[in-house]
Length: 313
Image (cartoon, rainbow, N blue to C red; front, side):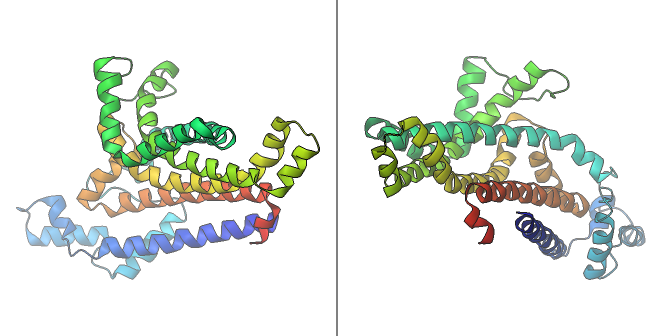
């Protein structure tokens, strides 16, 4: 198991390096006069050149990346080119918002997908058809449309939840729950639709295996067969899809945070990307990649625990 974890960690570190390099090179391709953008069109050219030199933009791009990487390895991501704010402090104030959203969606997706998928796979018949119809609808409806419908019904018409705004968990637990519920629900619809179908298919496949028939013939209780044998073997594909869904949820969080007015890193990414603020963008990229790497590592560890053969794959 230790060698398995070491391989996954090494792969994660290599992924961080490759993505940071490619991201920095791609962000440096546009021939944009950053100093002119910061100082305005009326600034003298010598002042603009001095600003670019102050930011280190007069150096070759590989040298700029090497300098950025050296500071990033020490946890120093610099300051924003446009606001002068410390990048780490700026992101640290917004990260809990997006983290709350992602954790909430992941938990809701895991629980509901497991319940719906097992219900459909075991019961079959009408239950199976209901889950499949819900899955198709969840995938067919655009995410922004689902979000708008949820806002209109539960926030505007019924008034059960606030339409916009965010209350921190440390400020008020009930307030935090009320402001995070609708965003979590809107992101969970498509995720539950996809993962529940995977759980359903995996449960059906396992139930058709010969060893399950043997266990039934030996008189084992159905609940024991389901929880100790079927779910253990059906969990690996579902966990893989759940990890993939997490990556897609990060993109959906950008839209959801904009609609609900959540001060998370999704809305922050849009703001600073339009400015071309490379220090902030690079830090956001690294935070995102680290989050995805951690989730994939957890998924791999769970799959390795459920299926020892996966550790040597």
